[in-house]
Structure formats: C-alpha cells, structure tokens
Image (cartoon, rainbow, N blue to C red; front, side, top):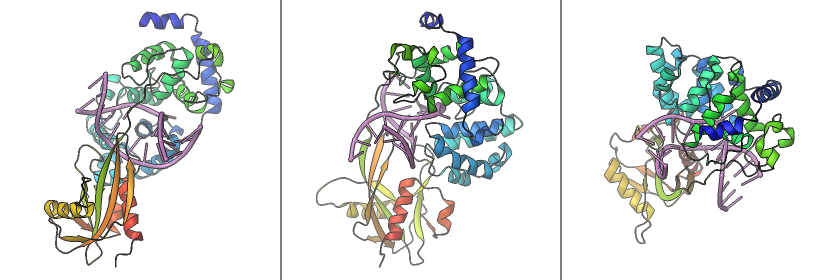
Length: 366
DNA sequence: GAGTCGTGGAG
DNA sequence: TCTCCAAGACT
C-alpha cells in the first residue's frame, strides 16, 4: 500500500501543488465566521457543527452558539438543557453532548486551554481522527492530516485512488498521502484549502475542472476520469416505521411532554408522547395510542380523530407519524410534565415534534 | 466492520 | 419525487 502511494507521488510535484493550492485558497477563501480568528475553542465548535452538516446550515447556529457561549468557561458553566436548545434543529445531538462534556474536561483538567497534542486532544469526547487534525492544524498550525469527505474526494482524483471511500479503512490511505503532501510551513491553510477546493471546485458531481487551480497536478483530469471518482458504495435505504403521537392538553391549556432517554436516537430531547403502532385491521392507531397513554403514563384521555401526519426522515429510519389531539381528564405520572405555551420555548424538540406542535396550533380543539 | 445517529438542500 | 448527500464519531 505504501509502495503504491510512493509510486503515485513519484512524478508529483509536491512543492508546486502546495503553492498553487494555497495561493488559490488565500485569494478565494470564503469569509466564514469561524475564520475571523484562531481561537481554538471557536475552531473546535465549528468543526463539531460542520460534521455531516452544510456550511450554510451551520453559520447561523455557530454565531448564536458563540454569542451565547463565548468561551470554554461559559460553555462549561452552562446547563445541559440550554446547550441542547442551542443545538435544536442541527441534528446528531450526541455531538453537542460530547462537546459539552469535553469542554468541561478541558476546563477542569487543562486549565481551560484546548490541548495541542494528538494524544491529549484525541481523548476528548467527540474528537475523532478528522476533528483532531482539523483543530491541531487550523488552531495550532501543526501539520496533521484532517481527512474528511472533501479531502478523500479531492485526493482520489488528484492521485487516482480507486479505493471505496465509504469503507472506514480507506481513510488511512488518504491520511498517509496527506502526511506526504501537507505544507509544513502553513498546514492550516493547506488543510482548509483542500476542503475549500472540494466544496467550491472539486465537487461530487460535475466538478469545475476548468476553474481548478491544481488541475495540472490532477491525475484524474489528465485521464478524463474525474467524473468516475471517487468510488463510493451506496448505503442502504432507511426503514419505515408507523408511529402515532398525541398532543395532550388540560383545562389550563398546558401541554404534556416527555423527555427522551439519555442515549440513542434524539437523546435527551423532548417530545410529545408517542409510540410505534401496529398496522392491524380492527385496532386503530387512535385506539392503540389511547391504551398506550393510559398504561405508560397513567393518562386518561379521549383522543379526537386523526388531526394530521408528519414524516421524519433519519439516516436509517423514517417515522410516519399520525397525530392525535386530546384533553387529559386526570393527572398523568411524572414521565409526562405539563408546560405552558411560553415554557415550551426552553425545551429542545426534534424538528418532527415542532411540526406536531404546529398541527396542534392549527387544529380546532373544540 | 457495519450499524447508529438528523436535517435541509441540491440535482 | 427520489436520491444523495455535508468539514464524522461512536459502538
């Protein structure tokens, strides 16, 4: 494997590639909020937010998050509820739970200074091989690879690497290549430049090779196979589940919500009580849900007929949720808490349950 | 290594 | 409408 890589790099002018790439980057880089300084904390937050998430989506979340938690100390001192609320709608919520825990760790064990060694930074929760390299290179200018999807796409084309980038072990090939090619003088600009190139020029479909600053160095462009790379195997389709959810209110117009478990899907977020229902004839979703609410929460309710449906698409699941509205006639157990409309603003909900609330607002409850 | 873990946008 | 995502990490 290493031999094969050395062979590819034999006729590759590393110095000229670095210069062409970094020169282009310094001239064309986007003005992004996490590029205003080199605060390791802000770099860290941005890298966590950017995992599997588009730049345009992250920008407003990043600005609001830094505004609310400007420093390590501020985030370390915050309670989990408001941190989760700041992440509401971003998805992959374990990211922020891990970030919060890791920031507390840095605050207590590293005097509030983000560590600058691969060994220490890798121990922090939520910091994997990519984020480790990104923080070390961007915040501390240390020549460590930061191999994400952009880097694998760009270098698969530059070096004509035909390994499947969907396979976890393939990342090591690109880390090894990056070690060889990365600029020792400006690793920060180099790593960001590769990702910027992947985002703006060397895109997944129809790359803009005629605008590419490093096309002279690109093996795939020379061979005319840039559209064939990278190789990426397909992932399986999400599995559909039929769900039913209830918006329960009482005489004071308070709503009854439930906190999800601290692990797994949508961990620690709040939701309207819901269940997976069986598609059996003779036992309606409404009936199944009503029995569930009584047995699980001790809630005595009479549900109205179907008020609407909400679809929630995850990476591996699809919830098809039927929405029912009803008034509670008693006091449920403490697995359900009653909140006013005003108090709802403090709790973080999945997007699907924000849609459920809107169906409640739009319904005629009388 | 394969499955788990969100969401909104683009083609 | 459907597919594929987008600066991955964890189990």
